[in-house]
Length: 142
Image (cartoon, rainbow, N blue to C red; front, side, top):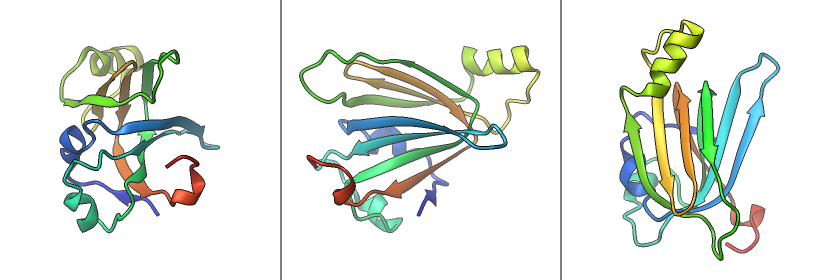
């Protein structure tokens, strides 16, 4: 079950050194794009905020709902999983300006996530974000 985040600031510090397992996109029948970033949390991070949300597992999906833009530079030539180094939530950005100008969109309520990893970079613009706990049985090697 997806738990919607109201305090998205926990993403900027709690995901530090989280291992990335997958990045999945899904288009609904109405054309809405959602993105799921599956991560395993660093066991050294204080996961109490997740426990307070009812999430017990260190393996979970970050679920970006109503995604308007996904830009990624991803490399697959490393000897280990990609790891999140820095997660920034940007209030004003060229990417948001591009959406406003190119598509004549209102950008109020849009959230730009800039995620710098050990090898990859992700830029995701969405309206809502949630978390979903993943049972260990679903991912081998956890």
